[in-house]
Image (cartoon, rainbow, N blue to C red; front, side, top):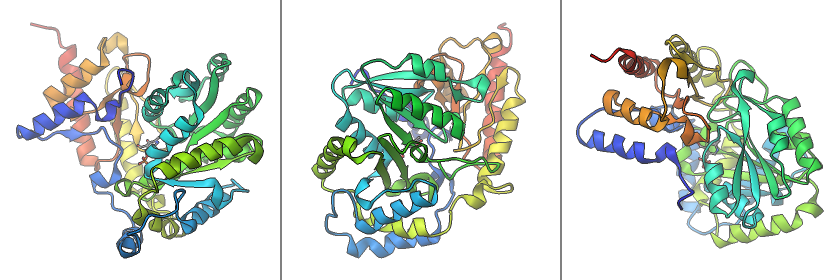
Length: 398
Ligand code: PLP
């Protein structure tokens, strides 16, 4: 466990809770939970769960309800990922559970997994927990956070088993274009690696930026594609995700069998939430209006990004997807040597909770992540407090 951490809900959150118990109001910008900020799920999705309760008392098939898996197959076909069958789909209690299963089924002790830096720390922690070794390939802020493919290539060794892609990306908000995904698929193919694509934010995109399922570009490669209801349908509390295995069935047979064994060991995923999947996926796209100009997620992203980039010594690549910003604090201006200390002090003094960049696998102490989920007035308040905090740090000591 000494190698495992999950800073999004780490020691800083404990301090935030202590402050709240002491009567303080903390602006918590650490977790990507739209529901916690009053962004409501579509009524038909909530109603589907309500209606499913009495039909959900028994365990389901370990891979999930047939109708839910068929709905996932149809959804991917509509997105260009063809040829899946319901048997290729595993439902789970959120992508979180499935990531862990996917890595446990794949890795022998010491096997390496290439994970983007910065990353969503679930991937790093789950790799280590499964006995593997997370190896981070760099994304380049100067290239709008696209992956540095030469770094990725240089880090492939004879112990590498998989390349992880998080697209749209958490924490950077970058949406990786088709050509980049094709090049990653080629690198994976050349070295016989599994491609794991965490596409949980695939429908949270701004400015009509396209997003293709990586597996659709790599039909000859064993790929796992991850998605779920948490972000697309704004119900993270339902704990409902899925994973689809694609590519040459012969090569993937042992792996699929191992996944099946792990799926059966936890009997089945939450059945109420599985009943929601066909209703949600065949219904309207829940986040379309929110991410279009004038929509809440769009306007909050705009305001947050603009306010941050107006602060002295702060820069930020504008996110194209998801609901985070990952700003940079210029070390020549702000002289932060310990970003966790920085986040602690921001929380203690200004009652604003963010996640330090090193908690998201970033190798330097010059970034932090915040969610763009609160209403604009709260974003303004939070960035105002950050500005005050940075100003006071810069002011010469008396
Ligand atoms: N993958 C990424 C990139 C995420 O940002 C998150 C949650 O924030 C998850 C997976 C976890 O999703 P789930 O709620 O389906 O477990």
